[in-house]
Image (tube, rainbow, N blue to C red; front, side, top):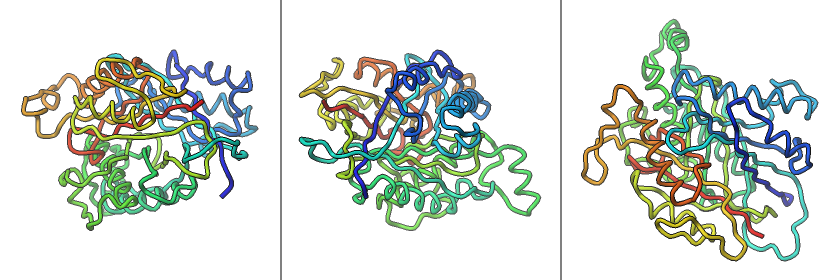
Length: 372
């Protein structure tokens, strides 16, 4: 495939409807709107079923980009992959990360694999398919399609797979029941976990991380089955999976690289350090990462989860027993604070709910750096 150039732009936002930073970069010529492939964002909602900051942010972005692309807002949403993750608890700061892609000549002096990005969609799912094998297998096919789109052939070169997946509503459960079918759960909130978990297992299947057959009853039960690079986020605004594959490829002439590590639990600081070191950043516990040989940290992407066994390294935690605050909000705040302390900034992407995304209670953490 032709050589591509991938750009990454991290833009702070003043609210879920704030598009001024992106529009300023477009006006200055720094970003070509026609080259935008995906936008990942953190919004300051609750991250739950009724977190409408996600939909608000996407609507604002589509409305702003529509005249720049000569499209309707709906057409913009079909063209660009939008993944908004709600919840900026603790020191996490709302922002968007814009990924662009275009054809380019490989400059003299660039060697090695560089950041590449690919996108694909699954078909729409029936409500009764969420959290089950249909979602797993369709996601696996979409991951492989996104890898091809990114020019990545070796699963080892995939460092982060971001997926936006659906959830169940009362109406969707009712529709399945009317057809004589039973959904994985009747709870909208629980359905978010089922959908995230099945989507993550789809990544594991696509990348060969899980080789055994996965049954419906394994979702949210067999936590020994997981992907080391999957990051999945549920939302009410869609009924299919949007798959974004991030990795390194010889077909890319990007000035960026990506690497990852896996946190074994919510306080695994060495894993964050390892992720930073994987992209050539000198990182030490308690010290913000230092640029090395012209390398600069762009962003960190991670998953956070309250350990399902109720403990972290043998000590009891109460995140799963708090009826006032969701466990995902506790986990985002805890992991976000840990990563922010090591990265030297709270403008990092930490998403809650890591079912089958890394080992139980842990999760993948990826870093993108710019090379001069």
